[in-house]
Length: 295
Image 1 (cartoon, rainbow, N blue to C red):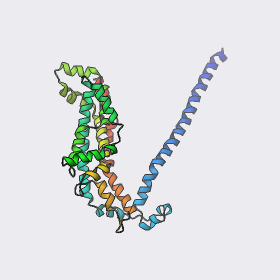
Image 2 (cartoon, one colour; image 1 turned 135 degrees about the vertical axis):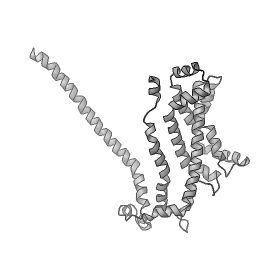
Image 3 (cartoon, rainbow, N blue to C red; image 1 turned 45 degrees about the vertical axis):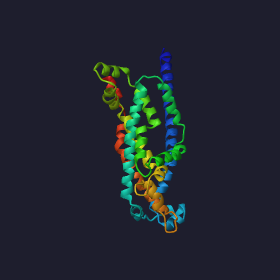
Image 4 (cartoon, one colour; image 1 turned 120 degrees about the horizontal axis):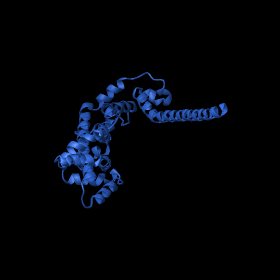
């Protein structure tokens, strides 16, 4: 009897020890993978940081010179003063803010229409919208320039306003999928209370989509902030963006790039996006949809 009672316990203890060993082994492989990924993504950034505080002579020595540095913090001052950094930063912030606000607002509205409104041809239109995601943006840049040039919008911010009002297929798709997942009971309750579609959209769906709105805003801001081709093609030197100004402002008298100054300028260029991300990231931790459904 003692053996009959003890043997199941021993078998149970054997089974419980094995998953722990397997779990520890999986954790080790996971950490190794994370370390490798951090190294792959972090080494280029480390190279930029080291280059930004290196002198011209240290850069000419190659990698060995970068790891025997005497930091040149004046590189950041020179990067800030070689171009009109405040002016072009303000231009970039204004352009990115206009684009991201309008793109997020229009994409959310169109996504709500595709998710909740019924009409003939809705699925066909949505399929056409998804098909436009397959077209590279650079393929439409020249035709877009010709159109804007003929209506006199080259050299102004109006092209970005029109792009923002048109929305972005990717964001429209994300908003449509998000709004589709919201229970019908919330919509029905609002209809019973006498709300029309605009009030349902503004009072029910938008408050629930706050994490999605912030995500779309941040991605749109990042894309607009980092865009080079469109500002280079459509804007004048007076109202161009910081990225375009930096591409021609960090050259020596012979036209050769000042690599260390470019690296210092690149780090300064990253600051607005990094600040916005850290300010907004706490809103990405969860959605208020679950609490709304429970309530």
